[in-house]
Amino acid sequence: MRSLNAGRTALLGAFTALALGVALIAATLLGLAAATALPPGEDRTALLAQLGTTCGVSLFTAGFVVAATSSYAVARRRREFGLLRLAGVTRGQLTRTVLLEALLLGLLAAATGSALGRAAAPLLARALSAADLAPAGFRTGSPGWPLVTAFCTGPLVALAGTAVAARRAGRVRPLEALREADVDLGVMTAGRWLGGLALLGTYAAVVAAALAGDPAELLHRKTYTLQPMLLVAATALLAPVLVRPLLRLLTRPATRPPRLVRAAALGGLRRTGATAAPVLLATALAGTLAGAPALVAAARAAEARSTVAADLVLTPAPGGEGADALTAALRALPGAVVSPSAATPLAVVEADGTAVRAEGRAVADPAALTATTRLPVLAGDPAALDDDSAVLAEEWGHPRVGDRVPVVLADGTRRELRVAAVLREGTGSNPVYVTPRNAPGARTDRIDVRGAAADAAATARAHGATAQTRAAWLDAHHPAADPQLIRRIAAVLGLALLYTAITLAHTALTTTTDRRRELARLRLVGTTRARVLRLVAAETLLVTAVGVLLGTAATLTTLATMGAALHRTGAPVPLALPWTALAVTALFCALVTVPCAALAALRATKGRAVEAR
Image 1 (cartoon, rainbow, N blue to C red):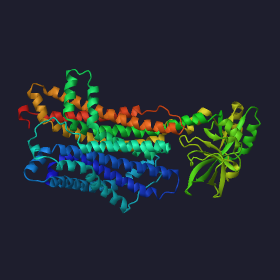
Image 2: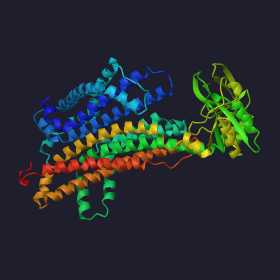
Image 3: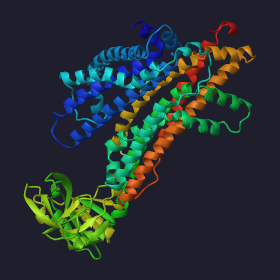
């Protein structure tokens, strides 16, 4: 308890991040408990995914921050641990001391966070409803299990994040009590090398297995949100190795001021890593959370543009009233190719007997379908579609033409349909095409028209239907930016940036304060106080830039793997890079780190240099 109280300043960042993490986990778990009671549907599924992503990001970020903070806190207490070793304390006692400190810290943060989460849950529910991410009137209840679960995560995350640092504390030698050097180069221990390379290898193996087996798995939200965390953690562990070439690259040409800044950053690699790690985390999360969905949306939009060949897309009056009369009138137009279709729910029964829901479309004229839609045919002929067959994508168990596929129709009827054609998987947006006989109750909701566009538009207006050009329909149904998706990204990203701001501010203040003796020596050799402040600010900005570059590299790696997955599935691979999100995050990090470091340096250089300790 005395040790924890004495080091409370250094552990303030870990406590704040952990308390916020527990609060967000408690609030999101309360939201998940309330969301499970909603009626089944797309809104419920989207809300569960949003809350699950928020909970996962909160847990990872809290653990990342605690691990980074604990690592630096143990490093700055080497002399203290060395003195304890000289006094007869064993390695095991030191390790247990650090773990007990982490347990106490986790319990205090868990209690604080659980209370905050219980109070914030109603506010979160109202915010989700206001942002149109939850149904109107969505409210959270007060079950006990979310609060108990969130409370338990506090000490567990604290112990897990401190385990490696505690082990390192137990290996401190008694001679460390005599350590006076400000240069810190021996950062890459065997455990750090092993952990970094293991995480990097795991990420590479998971990506390679997905690309070889099911590339579409890399395009799912839960995958591109959670999988990059392996890469971020690996990069953070290997950061001391990666920052050296980046520091030299950013300080070329090596004139005197850049050389001095570079030497200060290279001389304190642990301090440099402690500052660069949260910047890396924020940049990578911002890049992947903004870039991955944008890449998938852009690929789907490009895929839709390459698929839709109609000049006009007509939407009949609500309920499909008059659709048959409209279709007949359109077919009477000279030179017009008309392809009416209707949405129908169905399910494809997989090999293990599981019925998986799928989007289906009933088409009465397969030949007209092939004329108005450029289907990505892999095998077979969609024009051969009849009442005993279906056209589906290869994602449904890689079927072959002529295979019999069991399906469940909209009225619950089970049938085995022959595969007339197989489509490329693409982004997974291809429906299952059937004939009206296999779509009971379906009513025409879309009519594609090719040729005679002016006459077709006039005919549609006469029948009370809505006519859209190909470009207008694509913009409406496959927009480049989905406002709701942007709100979902902003909600999760805002939490990550909040964590980063707290961690960066605390790290900049703590690491700069620890340099009191180093800054005093600079003043003793003739450096003015103003130049010392400029040196600290420039070094902090340089280290922030290194963290941004590492985070950008992690982002580009994630997007490159998704691009490879799109290529493997036969979908277009658009060039959609989140430069705006990366730039805003970099500016945000710089605006937090540089002023905090400068303020700490101003305070550390206060008074006479010869009196600094």
